[in-house]
Image (cartoon, rainbow, N blue to C red; front, side):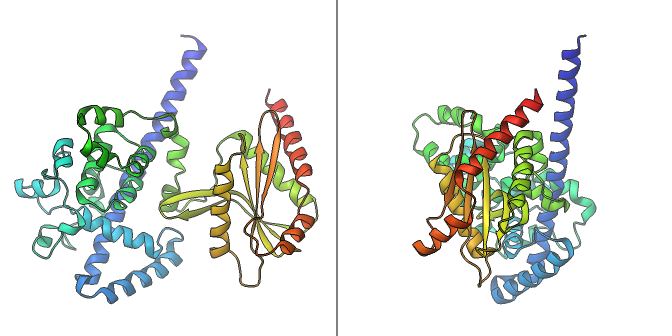
Length: 390
């Protein structure tokens, strides 16, 4: 056996092990959040009739759990866990009746499309008349997490996506197809956003549509590192969120961080790989600085490819978020810097369009590093790092 074969075998072994670890963590996380949702529902004492109490309970839990465990327990997240428990009830026994309620076997695609299948009970179907079929407070304990996980075969990130689907029939369909086709969260999100359920309903050749839908696209691939460093997994484990798409990007970010601080023109380092959540989507900002002279945050995003309009749109999304959530009342609006480290050239783009007046924009231009200077440093650093890597 040659060296290349040995290396290939070890790479495969390690990647499989990482994926297995991610699946294990995801299964426990999903089961845990189901239990959290159940306890909230029980705490509300059928909160549908006591909505104000239920909201106050979630707000208080968010504050106390946040202090104890850090991120991951916002009111939005806790409400998702509550809805998750209601939308995916697990029956108390393994009788034929409870198997029908739970959907012991994966819902069949045809029945999911027609709405006639006996899949999981959607949130709208959980009523006082069938609530007794759902577990009581003393029936399931944390030691039963593997049992609960067995009834919830998808990762938590998938269920978060599924909760965004309003129609119970569509939600059942997407769940069944995700299980059948082994969809990762990117595939699931793409299918939901492209209305795959509705398109399949209207199609005259549903089998062909389903075959086409189960075929992954290049952009759907998720590496073992991405699975392990998923923001939800990091949040659940209480780990620090340090992430980079490649060694080159990580090295460039480190060099640029030092370069900006060495300029001595008022840059103060705030953080790197700063995570933010908009809706159910997660994003990461490569570098975040505060400029003392301009009294504003500076958001820096690094791209290894060509600058596109999509990059500008994403930066404005970051700036809107930073303005609303991170900017203090006495501070100026944040500014964005997009750095594109292409093979043939380096491009720097300042996002200043959101500033309230031209005078402030001109002041920003004067105080911030010249775009050409940044581009030259980016190009020089990239060439140096690539040369060292040879």
